[in-house]
Amino acid sequence: MSDAAAAAAPNPEPTPEPTPGRTPEPPALEVTEVFQHVAGHAVLNGVSLTVQQGEGVLLIGRNGAGKSLLMRLVLGLDLPSAGRVRLFGEELRLLRGAHALKLRRRIGAVLQHGSLLDGLSVQENLLLPLMPTQLSRGEMARAARLAITQLQLDGMENHLPRALSVGQRRRVELARALIHQPDLLIWDGLTDGLDLPAVREIFELLRNQMTLRGLTVIGTDNMALAAVGPEDRVVVLERGDLLFDGSRSALEAEAPTRLELRYLLHGRW
Ligand SMILES: Nc1ncnc2c1ncn2[C@@H]1O[C@H](COP(=O)(O)OP(=O)(O)OP(=O)(O)O)[C@@H](O)[C@H]1O
Image (cartoon, rainbow, N blue to C red; front, side, top):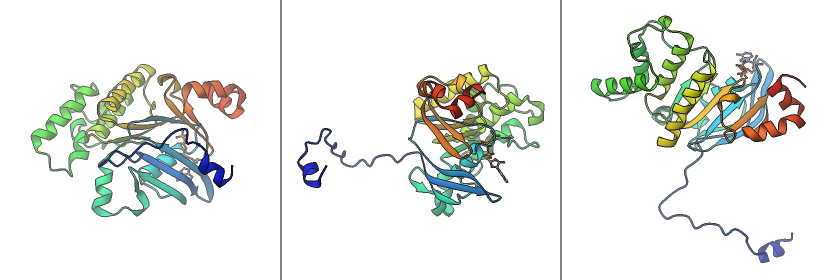
């Protein structure tokens, strides 16, 4: 269409007037054309992904697909070789000092391979994210109690991590990641050490937090598809490429006609 014709054409959807005094919320996460090279190999090949505030995303892909590396970039633990990562509108590469700290407090993370401190009790581990804050002892104790109740860890407050089962440790890690009421939760290795009923229970808890206070959740897993609903958003990464981004039901509908998705879902070409 020529410029003149475009100008004359009726606009089918008039642009809504911006609400005075309100700026639109930036996405919780914006990954733009990100490349990552590790030991001379490209492990992320121009990945782009936007996650809105309050949204939940399950990132799946086979072993070595690049899920953990992408999450490390999102958490600011590594910088990308090229491309941009923004959290709540802030570009991580440019953040320094107090500004970076303020953003970090909006994030909670559960990392693969566990990160509980062996010499500290469950309660002491839980309170670690609150240490740099100005909360009183009473406020900290209340926050710990709430987290312990929510994650069904009653009676384990004084246990050391080595006295817990793998599944219980995962719950403590999640409780710790949520104790400071972050706006974004990154959970790398969602189902590691958890059986399906435990995963479903935890998803329910996360859904409540998404509904009640707009928590954004990005979880990675090899599969975990069985625990998400048909309309939940699933992103598929394979050898550093983003293969699919849509609902679980759309993924299941596309898989029969796309070999690489079929292999991922059913383990056969
Ligand atoms: N520190 C490192 N040095 C060299 N290669 C690495 C390093 N970390 C990751 N890689 C490589 O990068 C690729 C992506 O790894 P990543 O851990 O992100 O995969 P993943 O999708 O999380 O896999 P998994 O499901 O097994 O956790 C793999 O090929 C891995 O071998």
